[in-house]
Length: 317
Ligand SMILES: NC(=O)c1ccc[n+]([C@@H]2O[C@H](COP(=O)([O-])OP(=O)(O)OC[C@H]3O[C@@H](n4cnc5c(N)ncnc54)[C@H](O)[C@@H]3O)[C@@H](O)[C@H]2O)c1
Image 1 (spheres, rainbow, N blue to C red):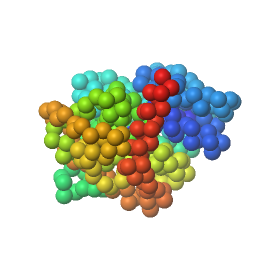
Image 2: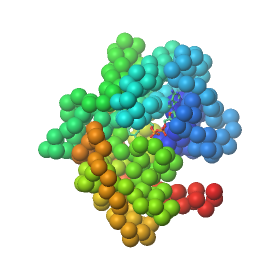
Image 3: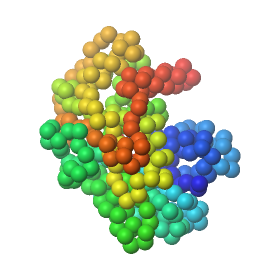
């Protein structure tokens, strides 16, 4: 198949690209390298003619023309302004990338006659702040996001639905939990697993905001990539939660990672960050039924993979 991945130089995108190339798909990546980097695509670039990279900002209409020219069978749309706090500070910037840019991509897919668009939505934001009694939440939960980022991630699935009705362009949206794994940027806002791994290896004290009893649903990147690959041919017209369904506290995460890194020192606590979710976990039962998907990587195996990856980066630097 011909697959075009926007945001393919990023953390999840580049991991997906490697998997697609390993399965002999023809892959085009569109990325402006604003947070991703070509280092993530080192393996992909050695794939020769099976792989093409296009440095384009999706806010520019030329991205639609490019997609129309490349005629992918499937478009996987991952490029995004992916920081909740940036979206609160600058909702217009967020919408220009996550709504207008996304529409440029969608228009390209329509004009190219692509058979399907896959989208990375956000299970941690589209459902707003769920009641603890509703956890793990399923896709039937009300969707009232409380950040501009969450609104954009909810709205684009609505656009996909409209395009399906208007133009019979198939789609699947994956509402991702907290994705972690090798290549995640440890400097960003997200990626507490990467941040802890870096600090533990550098002998620096980790900071936990608030009590550390807030919970997250940590899902490993290879499992997420597997969900995208399955959704290329299944689950049309649906939104799927992609998570483990298990709540892990940030304190538990730290304890497990510190043990794996051989660090005995406790983490430092700082004041809670405003607007952070208290608890979240996603019920992925629908993905199991329609995609045959479930998360299989344990948190211990996954965090060890991150620590090993971060350690390799340090010895080769
Ligand atoms: N990582 C998570 O836990 C998580 C959770 C839910 C949803 N998501 C979504 O998954 C997708 C991928 O996230 P990620 O964690 O790999 O982030 P990432 O920042 O590593 O990847 C995003 C990629 O998009 C590119 N990009 C950003 N703006 C662009 C623009 N205007 N034009 C072209 N390219 C642009 C960046 O350079 C980067 O390579 C995003 O849509 C994000 O919102 C991620």
